[in-house]
Image (cartoon, rainbow, N blue to C red; front, side):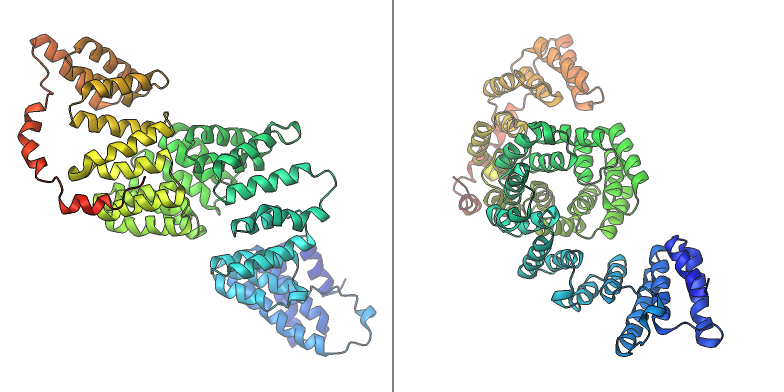
Length: 553
């Protein structure tokens, strides 16, 4: 075997560390020793092998330089006319493939614009599907949507069942039927599932979550696609974006049980676990994800939510930043870091993170909520109300958006009463949306409409049983001097959340009142009467009239 053949053998056997050293030695010997001579094609291929070894060893900057040397030599090779090609017996790596390897090195070192320039340097006729797919993603990053659409279409022209290219087109506004027209001619005859899949993904891209849920659920109910994790992932995402958090969590749990190695959208699953304070499940999930890979954003976001749930907020910021470094376009990384900064009262630092999340994903309700919380913490209620109004315009008139708008009004003393119509409409649209119920009952408490509040709470408790519902009912019953039932409700609340300090204090307060035979010391009626004149001064104020302009019917 010649020295070049030994180099090739190491490459074929994927012994990259040995290849790195031997290729370097072979090239130096060829340059300095006439007895060890590599012809031009062999030298070119040896340099490519050297670059491949460096790439696999994650020495990306050095690999990039070596690949560029290979391209320079390839130009000389293309000019030189080799007379006895068969005798060389050297299979050369295509020049286009070397350029793609340089692109991969540039992406690994976060040089996205340089990577795009490298791929653009490949002529259109020479671009393979993987090059067009890579270009499409890069074009999206810099806002070149038309070029991205063209590149995605080129992928589908050669690979009709490239699902990522299909979803990419639909995310850029290409309608489902147009995408179907591109792919159906080249699709297999038994492709009934494909038309439904395209329809569901188109609805998801158009933010028509209700329709997407119906379409994707019908596919999951078919025996031939039941328990497909890719389908379930889209369905879970649709339910998450539609605010059906409990159902989304159930689907994510099902996905994780079917495929513990599944990574996509596990950051959303982590958010839901943290939201429900399922700390043990969250810790287990984050540990499992980290075992799969440390080079994806999802494991670090999951670990960040665990730290946030366990009040290790400084660590949360570190893990969120780690995720952002790995994936600068991950929405959940911005939301997680913004939430942690908000928790630390660093509102000025949290605000730009929430804004960036909203810029990248204007369809995410959680981004609106985070930004509005920032403005409310800064007492910039006008800006908060403006963004709440934008949420309604962008996401539609739903129970969530109406409640979000009402929550800003409810926390502004001069216009608190204006929140009630929005809450009533929200409760009518979705009677099970408890956040609207909580805010409405709080307002009724401020207005001392305890009987009305009790009526709403009792109705909700027919279908829901949460610590907060039982606690609020207990507090209202205390106000109407129904102490025994109040104690019963406090007991139920405490059984649902044994660590709830406010519930325990409320129970102790009622027990003490019973023992002393006194009326509720919790009554704030006198205080409200003292403030009633002050509240009347705001009737017809400029602030109220200014904000009334932003109301939605």
